[in-house]
Image (cartoon, rainbow, N blue to C red; front, side):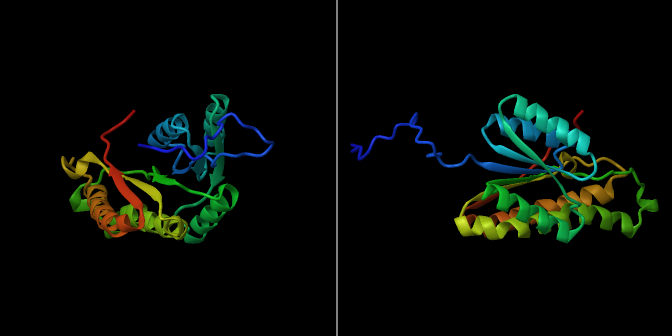
Length: 207
């Protein structure tokens, strides 16, 4: 049995917003194929979207206009995610403006050249580690203080089916994504008691 203490009038308008602000999602790499699809779906799910871009402001603005014209809420933010200070500045801007980041999804990607193992250089490996491990670690650490303070949050990383079904000449990429799987599993276990969910989605090739 449930006793109703007070009935809330959801249509009440006293001149001030009486309802909790909508959830906020930061989509890193929002101008890419997966980033755009995630942003559109999250907007449909009721999130206010922060669309991150690095160089393609025109595409970010076009996506923002598409979402807002459909009744959603979106804004754009520029950051070089390979620069630690830029990541911290972006996160501070987002939290200062929205007072929340409920979901962080990193859809950013770098060019993946096909390289035979006989031609593979350690620098090629490091470039993929930077993109998949160092960047995600910095994004994680920059948003954790906020999510930990409210004991809630969701973080999503993007993997690849190639870790289970490898293609030739992609050793540098597949190795880094395999490391990201271990990274995700480990921090998911560590952060779940704090109310923070960490997951990874592993797509195949997309258009």
